[in-house]
Image (tube, rainbow, N blue to C red; front, side, top):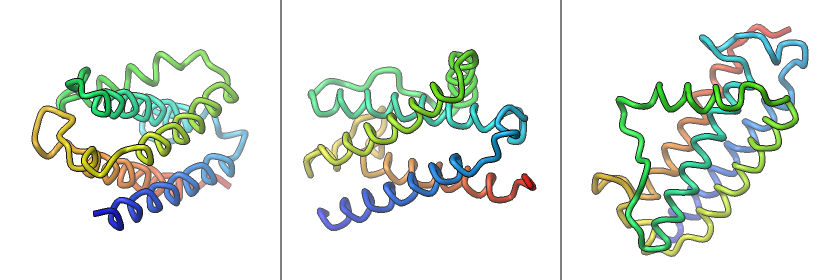
Length: 155
């Protein structure tokens, strides 16, 4: 299990570096353009920050022995994303970027601080909701958005 956890943390670190690089290389003159459905790159960053902060909160509850709160059901995903993007809509690029990068660092640190027992523990409404599943979802989520960014004709 320890080797698996270390591998997942390494995968997440790599995915975060790729995403941060993609954001850093995103053309400055396109930052406020809607290029992801209804979203700008700032909106994508905002929604990642929202998810990261929620996951950090939930993992903190797990390590404190408290039940999960504010669990987002599948039927609530779009509303949660919209809320997280809208609440950051008036922020500058630097504010969005700083929160984006800080939330990734804090999420990594939270995962790294988990005990092996925590990794197998349920921290959501179903037995499958474990940190092990969560980190896999985080990695897949980053990869999905990286594919979108790579497919954009930005130059």
